Amino acid sequence: MCPAMTERPRKPLGLPEKVVEANPKRKPIRGGVAGVRRKPAVEVEPAPTVPNKDWRTRPQTVTTPKPPARKIPPKVVSKTPPATVAGAGVRVSKLMAERGLCSRREADAFIERGWVFVDGVRVAELGTRADPAAAITLDKAAQASQQRQMTIVLHKPVGYVSGQPEPGCIPAIKLILPENQHSTPDTPRFQPAHLKGLAPAGRLDIDSTGLLVLTQDGRVARQLIGEDSQVDKEYLVRVEGTLDERGLALLRHGLSLDGKQLKPAQVEWLNDDQLRFVLNEGRKRQIRRMCELVGLRVVGLKRVRMGKVRLGDLPLGKWRYLRDSEKF
Image 1 (spheres, rainbow, N blue to C red):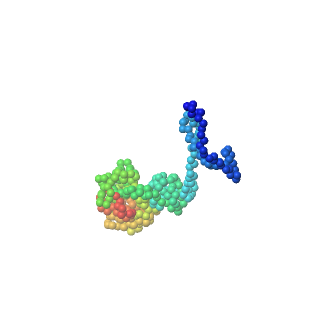
Image 2: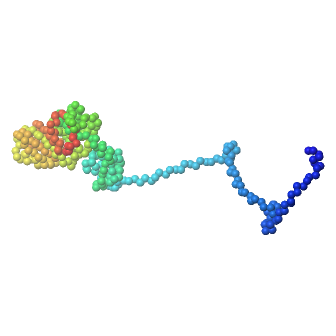
Image 3: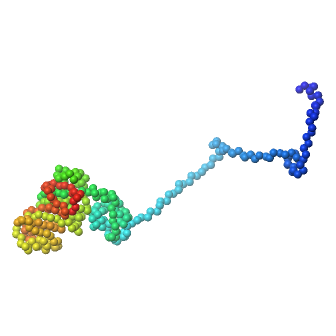
């Protein structure tokens, strides 16, 4: 700085001196000059703290994981049909067979699959008992299974046994072959699955011929050979010997076999050597034994009808499926 400039005296500006009068009613402001108004302080919100994202400086906390919550299974209330106490009621399978729903064997299979309902409750345990008046229904799966079961009508020749094969004999089921089917436009074609579980519903002696029914359906079997069966069977019987009116009356009613009286039968002459029998039972070799008791010998026997199903024009050794319109 120049020395001459520092030594020069300063000139006054000539401005009037500002006098500020103090307000006697105003309280003095602490920390400030009395009489001087100050602007009110503005409150400033503190800036939010930003957490330290650096894992090296962040405090480490060890948390113990909680064990998973234990799931409590819902309480299952088992529904059981009434009268299932040991010794009480009747076996469900027996009730089903008696009512014609199916055979005893089929009933056990349906129960194991859970296809049987007693009073609306599903039964899945063999040996279950129920009240004799209980309502028993089948699942749709059981009904569909029954609809797939087939019944076959066979014209059995002589020399074939109807049931279990005997030594040197051929069972009639061996004739159920595709080439032996007597098919019509309204019958299905043969399938090997139709042989599974196929069994004769009634017997026909090895030296007899005619209508033999084989079925997969237990309802049909029970209807034909059950203890309470009401299906009659018609036979044409060729005989040798003489028969008076008394003997004819005995054939109709009055004979006994194996100590048990036979049920009434319809017996009449068709010609000089042929009789027509209509029976409601099927004892072993019944007609032959009946004829022997009255002095006749059977030389030929043919079954032509079972219930409403007739043998008709079915050729010997041929078979066909039971039609949907046919009922025993």
